[in-house]
Length: 138
Length: 71
Image (cartoon, rainbow over all chains, first blue to last red; front, side):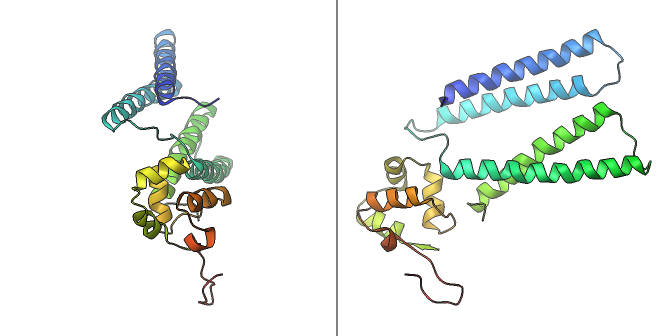
């Protein structure tokens, strides 16, 4: 199902709101729990909403024309960026495992997972940004 | 890869945006195609050639690594 630009921005706002509210609820219901999950949820939710607002404002400032949101180049770069990110995260989690095994770095399960998710998400965007600037994945 | 998209496009009086609309891609894709920095799929290459009223091998060419021109 192909979504229009407006639908995508609306979904970003909804998802961002749900994540932020969920994080707030976790903080309020479990004060002093020591988990990073609520903060991560609130942060991610805010980022989603801000990105949705900014992109909507940007699209409204551009001349209206039937420009596809995606084409074969953006899909290719998107897919390759995610693939590179997956591999980098695999290496990162392997390093975490061995650091934990050697008792050089001890993290809770929640913290390790949260950090891995952040590494995966941020690296995916960075790889995609790099390939978009370069023009292609090759 | 080398392309002659800009040459054919300007000959027809098309803007990058107009060509992008015709072949249903983003304008940035046409920009990178003209620079030879994006390798299009066969479908897109065919669509671009058709929009420019030319053959694919008139629009796109590859140079062999040994330095010879591609056919």
